[in-house]
Figure 1 (spheres, rainbow, N blue to C red):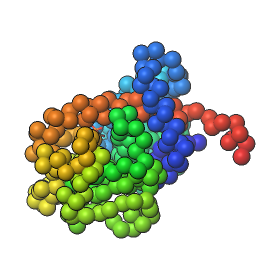
Figure 2 (cartoon, helix red, strand yellow):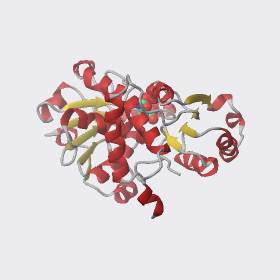
Figure 3 (tube, helix red, strand yellow):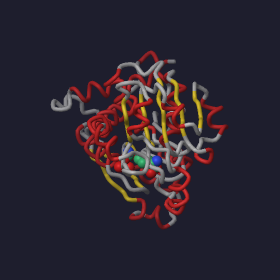
Figure 4 (cartoon, rainbow, N blue to C red):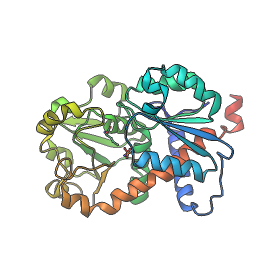
Length: 307
Ligand code: CP
Ligand code: NVA
């Protein structure tokens, strides 16, 4: 049984298959020719807010022939202390798959282990694999293969989104530069584990010079609200703006996973100048996640099954 819990454990051929299938699902959206979730119910268990992930999975499951069942963690017994493993064993008896957004990565992993149904990480404190698969798809859709390119992430480089970028860089062979204050750089142990060409620096300008993609995320991730004032102070200046764009390669893409806080991690003019890319990126969540769902429920080729 397959899961998508982390980019660290997603093999390159699987990653490439998901990206290739996403293009087919996007091109073929109106025909709805493939319905691999026909007759299935998928639970979406969310302990944090969501606009894009929630709607794209709801619509995607529906378009693949299945039925989404949305559960807010606080409205089920999980929020009142029922253990993850018991919740997982119940949902695993009823549903055909699960999409989980929560805090600890270990909770998603425990859920998958006990539920015994295909499980997708829809964001934890540590990773956001569906987002980064979409970002890779969006970059390649606009600029061709990402191999050999330079991606610069600016801002809180220790949160879920850059962590998933780190695993993607190692897997696909592009250079990743993380521009962040010391306190917001990823743990060295994680970098060592991932491998790949990754540069961590406090020098924003050096990181942006010649980049093919400038990318940012919020300074205050969900769950970190109590640290907001301190974060805004320390991260001040780690912003994508017109000056930084001038340092990147001419025609460099600017992307943002959204939601965006103008005047913080990105300025208004740069956000609006790149809105086409940013909202294409948001739309692509739908197409890429349909490819993920399809990959999860599709049996591997016969030869692989015999191995
Ligand atoms: N980018 C992203 O995951 O958005 P939501 O939090 O709205 O799902
Ligand atoms: N790092 C952000 C991503 C939001 C999609 C957060 O966790 O809130």
